[in-house]
Amino acid sequence: MKIFPPLSNRDDLGPHFGTHVDGAIGAVPGNPVRIRTDLSVTLFLTEPGGELTVEDNYGTHEVKLPAGDMVRYPSTRPHHIKPVTRGSRIASFFWLQSMIRDDGARSLRYDLDQTIQELSLGRGVEDAACVRLTGIYHNLIRYWADL
Image (tube, rainbow, N blue to C red):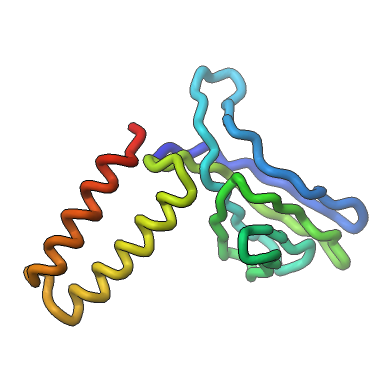
């Protein structure tokens, strides 16, 4: 995984950041490093106000977290910042390049991993079905990985 250096923003009362999809490539000024921006991360530095709103296949989700919490979401999804109604909204944000390029494949990998962990707790990691599923998990990563 590659990480774009964190940036920060401050939004005060008034205008807000409209709906957008993050750019596909992150470039560090003065540096030849470029990353594919698969995942966006927002770290909230002040209490909620000017909520982050993310759209996905299941609807629109408002993210209203306390200072110190962060959220990760696919950079491919439209999102915006709602207008700040009191005080200031201060946040840090950055992007991650995943080994697995495709959103759907990342979601399947996560679901499979969670299922293997749940089964392993009940059956033990040496259970034949858990071993087979773990093999499938790793073979899918080999297939999907973009290093």
